[in-house]
Image (cartoon, rainbow, N blue to C red):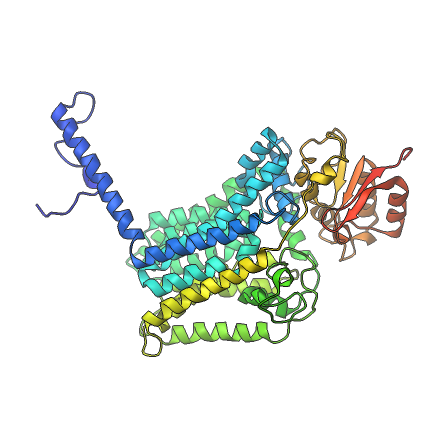
Length: 577
């Protein structure tokens, strides 16, 4: 005997073990003993995985990530209140889908349908309970999806040792825009989760895995693309690696395993929606998004989000360690979070420092980059380029490069650590203390945050009445979204509705100059019993207001209740109109 413990596969194929009901008691006892041995082997492997230094780092970093993200949801209003525009669109569209309406065909929707499939179970829960409880569940799940990316990233690099694992997991755990994005239902945490699941299947100890595992990677990356098209970046880089890495006939075997699965992972979830409204689907998700004109955002603000210095920058562009709710990190979810049109020199210095760290770390080594390191580096560059170049910018865009930046920075740090000037025994505690200080700063900035809920407004609106709003998060947070009476316009995404009507022209881009668009909005508003307009003039970014449309609206509707900064203004139809 070799003394090697049998694996699960060894046990299944072991000769001389009778199967079926006719097995003797002795044989059954042997099988039970082997089953206990298999369980013992699995437990030993789990202990060996988690109780090594990299495993402990992954556990602690994941716990830190979960704690910060869930702490945000403990702030008043953040679990069930009104914090975002997009979360209402995604949950509302999923709810309408479970009620029988088809996105793209029955109501406007400009994102791929993957998030609707993920949220379908949550939407079903909303029908059994309330939309408020469903919103809370969606936020909890998204926070966990974001935190789940930390051990997945760590698993990719743990073979490189403690320093690389610590930096990779730590950077992702405290990456400001990843935390801010995870506070509610957004696309990026779910896309990143699927991408990292795919890359874990595609690589083993930094090298490409066998074709069978690449097929699983293709399925996961295809579905990631069905959540957000930006997942095409890691999918394309992985395809190039499959073709570029040498092997005895392995290139085509890899491609045959990966490419059909990638196509299936995308097309299978997308096909029903594409078939129901092919022209509208393609125009809404591709051309309207590409042609969309957003507000101009300075490069310094984009770099501040990408490099993470929003932790120490105020909304006025000043450096401060005591900004509290006035930090860019705390105000990230607000469209008007940044008062300054420029943030000065710090974002550029941080960018140069980050580039220098990666360049020196990758140059100061005696081996070639692994395939995983190439994938992370190239994907990070592509993702950052997309964020910097796109016409519009929102804080959650910076979450797309987060895992790839973390892996790249972690790999570079690992190449620098262990040298005479940077011994590992100094680097590990220094990095750990820095991460804890950053996390403490984030908790301090998060602690005073609060958001309004929709409960105070709900009593103004009887259930079953027709409510038109430019932000369905308002009606979802007040449990006035689910019941849509006959004849009531089904507007889940008011901006998407304007884009679809105008062939991709937003209100900022001149949609109010298109008479058909304005006339359709007047017709929709004319069917409403109540109109709920969001705060901070949000409706001006989504509804093509004209002087004539505003005059008609002010004559046909009267204010109900008072305006509030978080909930906006509710209007009720005037009798006789």
